[in-house]
Image 1: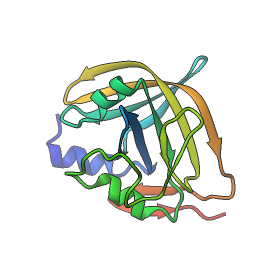
Image 2: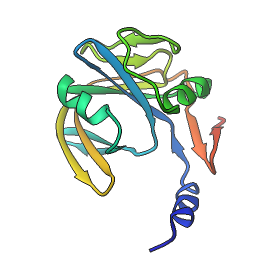
Image 3: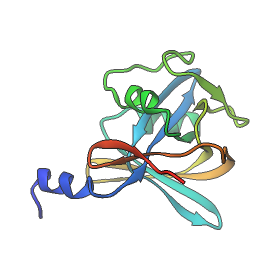
Image 4: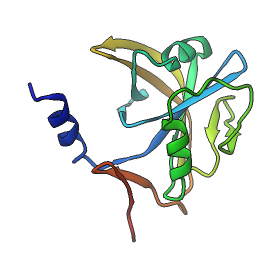
Length: 160
């Protein structure tokens, strides 16, 4: 197996969209920037995110029964950086980053290129991460927004 630094360097060659997962557990909002987010199935519509086992998010999703994914727009680096910072605690309201509520009652990042809202389908612990599988109950896209990308440890975007 590759050394951890070699593994991280290889993964940085994979350009990906930037997403933030959020949940509302017992009136407390919490979210984090994730690099491991993907679609899993169209029938039923399932997505997955992978979260470090030490993070409080998997437990909060279990309590909440669901979560939202905000796919960030190219002007949302500040939101990505905020949710990527460690040491934040759950809050009763949106604080530093402007948010909005989904129809299903989950918090989301306002102005994102897209939102996907899920009810919890399953969780699996593998290695040092928890794989959270969500069944999509709501999805919204703003086609006027260009995506924020992450590649080689830096933010990028696409042009048309």
